[in-house]
Length: 231
Ligand code: TMP
Ligand code: ASP
Image (cartoon, rainbow, N blue to C red; front, side, top):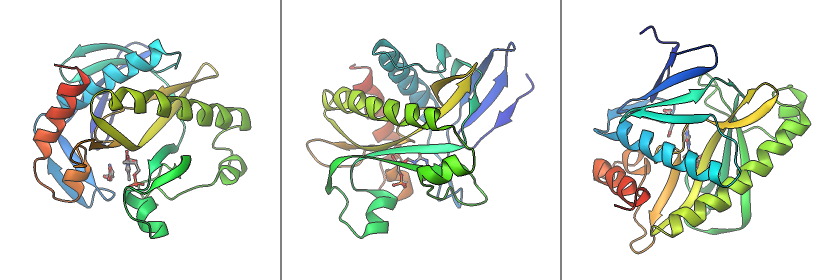
């Protein structure tokens, strides 16, 4: 079938006027696609982890674009107009935050911190402050307020979910879409878009293993899936 859009990790296929089929690939990129590779089985893991988390969040009152799992690598979702923002929630310092402020990875933050980046590959997803989001008309005040509230709620729910599975949720990235005036959680929630550290060993169990060449990338993804599904 003709694709609607192909991104770095997923392909979108049009269905009806209201829905899309999302196909999750094994291709991995990092540092704005300067680093490329393959993580065998990643597409299956990310589809199943995302589907499970979307269902869990929906069950706790979070509205998402998720409709159903179609196959190992595919899900059906509602068509939304994606807000051009990456919304990041951090519980502990890591990644770009640790580097920017010169703090040790793993330093706990006094309170969960919401950050926004402008979704733009040519600009390298620069950080953007809420005032600039409003000034540029990327979201309305009410929409941004809903995005922030939902992100904090998702953070609490996901942190509990992973804590029960021996994983420490360090930070994650969300994307939101608009549909008929309503804001829905969209995109994916997977080891590509979160930092998860094993509670016992402190080892990263997410895409940082690929970003930092730590080895055991496939195994970490499979272990996250196993724990998410509680097999
Ligand atoms: P960062 O510390 O590199 O800014 O990443 C924060 C979180 O966002 C981390 O959980 C990884 C996730 N992330 C994405 O999902 N996509 C991206 O392009 C980047 C840079 C980070
Ligand atoms: N997915 C992003 C990219 O390629 C970056 C990342 O996740 O580190 O560019």
